[in-house]
Length: 133
Image 1 (tube, helix red, strand yellow):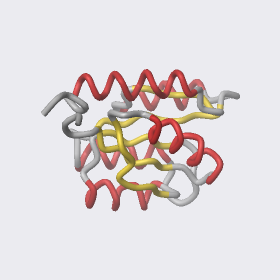
Image 2 (spheres, rainbow, N blue to C red; image 1 turned 30 degrees about the vertical axis):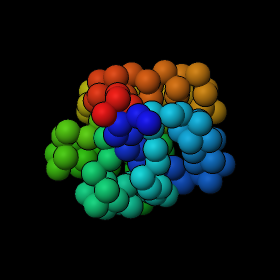
Image 3 (cartoon, rainbow, N blue to C red; image 1 turned 180 degrees about the horizontal axis):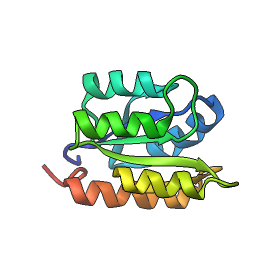
Image 4 (cartoon, rainbow, N blue to C red; image 1 turned 60 degrees about the vertical axis):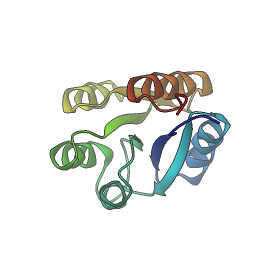
């Protein structure tokens, strides 16, 4: 049995996108979903409660958008790694801003399972999650 799994918080206002990401994370043996949220405000609250290793968050959401939430998370919990999701069309400037704010990755939507698996593997290796314990 592997050791500690990478704790992942998923944040998107689209149930369809959440379901796609959930499937990839669930299929991963090194990561587990510790919670989901539908907007940035929920993400900040749940990140504070759940202390995930990685937050995968949409950029465009109602209430508090992903970039504002990323700013707040980086200020309150800089140890949490954040990957952003972006619809491909016309989002280059938002993706650039996400990287400037500290995002570790910006994935396009629809989410490419291979890219998401690579992100999970990278973050597991970085954190030591999934190692024998």
